[in-house]
Image (cartoon, rainbow, N blue to C red; front, top):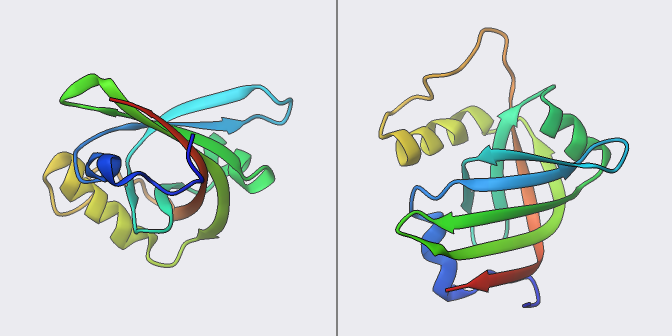
Amino acid sequence: MTNGKIPKKFLDLFHKRAFASLATLMPDGHPQVTPVWCDFDGTYVWVNSARGRQKDRNMRRDPRVALSLMDPDNPYRYLEVRGRVVEITEEGASEHINRMAKKYLGVDRYPYAQAKEVRVVYKILPESTSKMG
């Protein structure tokens, strides 16, 4: 386990099309896991979702989260990040989901947007990491 900084050897996972499994906590304390797109700005892991979804409600109520990123080129290489959501914002969220669509789908605009959907960015401060590979 490290002090929360993302190990340099694993930064490449944020540049690949590596899906993350995001774990949040339900109101009764049970875990809820969702596959998500993510990136890293050097300080925070960014996750994008729509307001009102289960993970949105969970992170607003309890900021403790964990993510696991598996290397798409080597499933035995992964990074786990445990941390806290320290910022939730709608500002720049539409642009962010379009950048994620470019990274993960190779398209300029997020193709799954729904009418009246409000995009939200969650900035997660890593507190600890574990890794393999």
